[in-house]
Length: 263
Image (cartoon, helix red, strand yellow):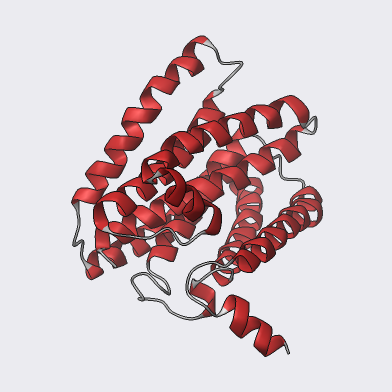
């Protein structure tokens, strides 16, 4: 029976509605378990420094996914597709946090610096592997990064003049989602890619791929504002911001690299 369920709902290409719901529920469970039984237990202070320290691990997820099953195919199998790749990244990140905390106590060097080292080294290796595949569409980098900069730059005025509505850290997270929206817009409208996720695919069919950029702003900005306004536990709030960052930046990097490689 389990085999039939897997074959019907999870072994098909793309993302079905059932897959989307199940993966969303698993994500919520993982968010809670990691926060409650790991981060709170080890006593790591989940502040803005922690959010920034998680950036290379988020990037690693995106770059590694572009090399995985269904993309460049350098790595194949369960661990390089959803949800396996998320488990793999978590299995690397959690020990990296523990080791970084230990090294901070031993050498009096911030755990955040150690985390950047542990996160950045595999990112560099994975980026090198993308060059071995080759970039059929190198102009994708210009289009995606240019679109992201053109949209995100004016929003920085809110950071400068109205920081109560858009803080620096929220601006950085929102920019990651603008990168995601821009990469989808460019890949679908200019390079013939198809959105595989259910809800974005529906919205693209209804409005066109251009809508992904303003949609990201319309959804993510209020979410970040509401987190600041309603979640009183600062550490929980910052952990949720890490999750929001990962859901945008990792996908944006994956989409951009995949389209640039033409795979």
